[in-house]
Amino acid sequence: MILGRKLTGKTMKFLLFMFVGVVHLLPLASGKAIYGNGPSQRTFQEIKEEIAHYGDVAKSIINLTVYGKAQNRSYERLALLVDTVGPRLSGSKNLERAIEIMQQNLKGDGLENVHLEPVKIPHWERGEESAVMLEPRIHKMAILGLGSSIGTPPEGITAEVLVVTSFDELQRRGPDAEGKIVVYNQPYTNYSAAVQYRMEGAVEAAKVGALASLIRSVASFSIYSPHTGIQEYQKGVPKIPTACITVEDAEMMSRMASRGNRIVVQLKMGAKSYPDADSFNTVAEITGSKYPEQVVLVSGHLDSWDVGQGAMDDGGGAFISWEALSLIKDLGLRPKRTLRLVLWTAEEQGGVGSSQYYQLHKANSSNYSLVMESDLGTFLPSGLKFTGSDKARVIMEEVMSLLQPINITQVLKAGDGTDINFWIQDGVPGASLLDDLYKYFSFHHSHGDTMTVMDPKQMNVAAAVWAVVSYVVADLEEMLPRS
Image 1 (cartoon, rainbow, N blue to C red):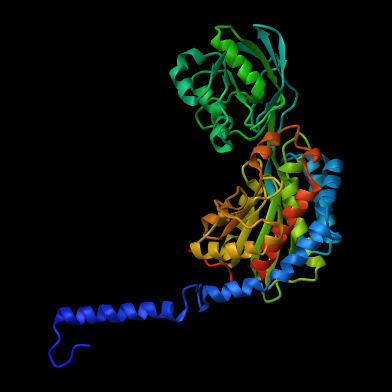
Image 2 (cartoon, rainbow, N blue to C red; image 1 turned 180 degrees about the horizontal axis):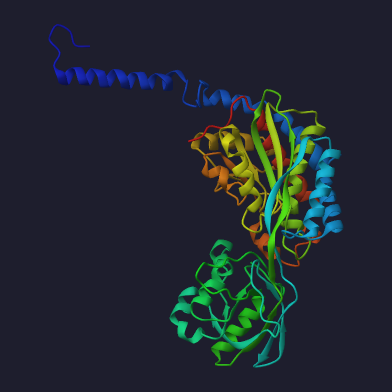
């Protein structure tokens, strides 16, 4: 304070700055308002203490699913569905049957507000398909047509092969591709880098005049296993047939080409697209006791590709999401806000079901505290991936500390997922389960995706993580803070 003289303009500004600064620092000194979201005045220490009180609840959930009466339940439920129904391609009768069965199961489990929300989804069928190498030797190749691919003429396409390892090489050798079948032998470093060849390979090959494209399967490991998946055509670019071949055949043709061998392949594909089909997202809830209008969403997708059983992708994720609600109900728990299970439809076609769900519910996005998606396998989890504000991340780290008894406490970055990205882009915190992705992509979208891949004990642990996180976040006095 300056006394006994007239204050200059600069002095007045300085004092005002200091006063405002002190006012802003007061909450820090008093421990208030630094973790506020709206009217909240709680400190992080208070939130940390609140979460610590859930230690016994977390242990009860873990004991019930990992060691108690509910152990192996999610595995056994999943096995019953996929053994009975099989793969569940978008638009198929199998998917319709699976949705009907799951609606009955969720009602029989005593969950609340069980209902189906209508969705229009793509309907594509692969038909009969084959690829035979005619030169330099006769060799029948294993292939899987890619989703939304057109078929070949009935007599097929017989053409010489051009093998490339990248889009850059294709551009350099563009004149050589005209009238040929382009084979991509791109290296596998990680899924996100390699999958662009599956997604865009047909378009890039068509741009240089190719008749068809065959893509090395996007897989971390192969025992002569082709892997399917969605691909996208581009407006104004001719549509050509496209399929995935095995890692082994892609590498073999690459070796042959490097020796100067002429390679000729006959490709036949009966793929066909039909008008969009009627389907449903499957929904069930445990209604919140204090803030029923607020939601923590747990989810996985019920559809799969038409090979294997769709047990890993994404039967496991769908069923641990169901299991999370079952465990909470079995323990007689009812969180403050609504815990909502959604089993998505047509995720494999680009999140079609979740997109339509978002359009239907986005007006209430401010009431979603957390959206969770399990679609990266249910092998032994290594942690939780999370996207949200720094304040929310610190809270999630405290929640994950409750899982110390099973030693799964990591909170990593990038909690996005195809079916929850719409909400994350709206500012809703998002989380996904993380486990062994190398193993996951060995079986992904292949005939190998069966119950044999699944481990009941690992599913138990994954379900425990899913249940503890979803329940505690749903029962906290406040929603997770946003940016």
